[in-house]
Figure (tube, rainbow, N blue to C red):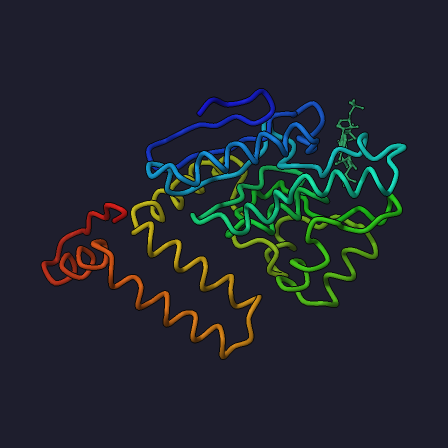
Length: 260
Ligand code: COA
């Protein structure tokens, strides 16, 4: 699968890095970026060699500074509705059947923050800044921010960030649970890659089931979620990877998961 100009795709063994490449616009997401994301995710979904995705932004300043505000100017409600009907790339990341790590290398704002929240794990540079500044444009977060943010940080903190539109730094992000880890800027890539490789060494079926089960916690009542977990747990007993994992433990060796 080829990179597009606005979305670079790099492979390092089982880890695939997607880099939004509009550094001159702080990687603001426009229709072209979203289309490239849809295409990349559709191809990577069925690519057995790709086991973990890392999402980041080009340059040293921004992860993604939001949706491209230039696209909003003069746009009517009907046009905006149609644009949103083109598909929800945030949910595609959220539901993607493999782990996705957001590597926050700078500004992570608006749609960028919403996309990071749709990823599974957020690792931030100590230079990253996060926020939902939509209120200053006279709008609200419209890509999951009002739903995913309170689930991560609680209602009060979510409303405070959304009402004020103010940015917080990575350390504050970690404190409130928006960011999972903060690392020195120079170490962001190696530390993220090391985590991605560690995850990629696990059974893809087990990773997929783990993601499904954990994400179900936000969508299902506890009783349903617990039942769903058991179904997924039982299903994994049909995989060769489960036999390999158990055998490897008993034989005191490292398992070699084949994704079967
Ligand atoms: N959409 C479109 N363009 C954007 C953008 C966005 N979300 N964020 C930044 N840019 C563009 C700027 O317009 C500027 O383009 P130009 O050089 O052609 O004028 C370029 O990226 C660099 O941004 P600039 O504002 O000059 O950088 P800065 O360091 O002074 O400020 C920010 C950085 C992040 C504080 C500022 O760019 C900003 O507030 N961006 C908008 C964030 C936002 O509201 N996001 C939510 C959108 S729904």
